[in-house]
Length: 179
Image (cartoon, rainbow, N blue to C red; front, top):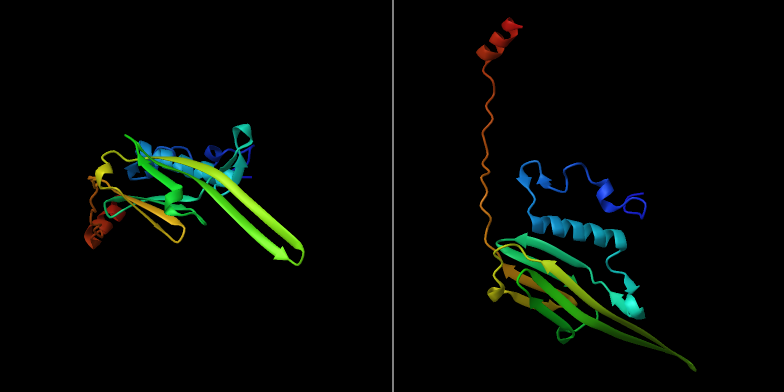
C-alpha cells in the first residue's frame, strides 16, 4: 500500500527521482523540498485536523505552490476565514502563513439547540526560490482562497531543440550492404 506507515512516500519513488525532475533537468533544492512537502501532505491527509502537543487542535489547510509567468504563486484554501484572520510574512528564505480558524454552527430544532465549534491554529512555512522579490509580493484573499504572488527571476536553461533528420535512402542501403 503506497504511502502507508509500512511504505513511506520515498519507498515508492524510482531511483534517482529525488534528484531529477525529468530526464533533462536537475531538481533544485526548493523543488525537492516542495516535492517532499507535497508527498508528506498527501500521506498524512493535508486538509485533516489533528491534535498537537498539549491537546491544541492543529489545522492544516490545503496549499498549492506553482511557478508561472515569472511568478511564484502560493494558494491556500481557508474556508470560513477572513483576511484579518490570516498573517502572511516573508522571511529571508520562506513564505510564512499563519492563522487560526474559529467556526461556530448553531442548529435549532424545536426545543433542541445544537452548537458545534471548530477551532484550529495553522502555520505553514513554504521555502522560496532563490532570487524571489519579497518587496513586490502581493497577497489577495477571495472566496476563502488566499493567493500570494511573488516575482522570481526567469531561470535560464541551456536547453534547445535539435531537429531530427530522416536517414537518406542511399545511407540506409549502405548500412544494409555492410551487414
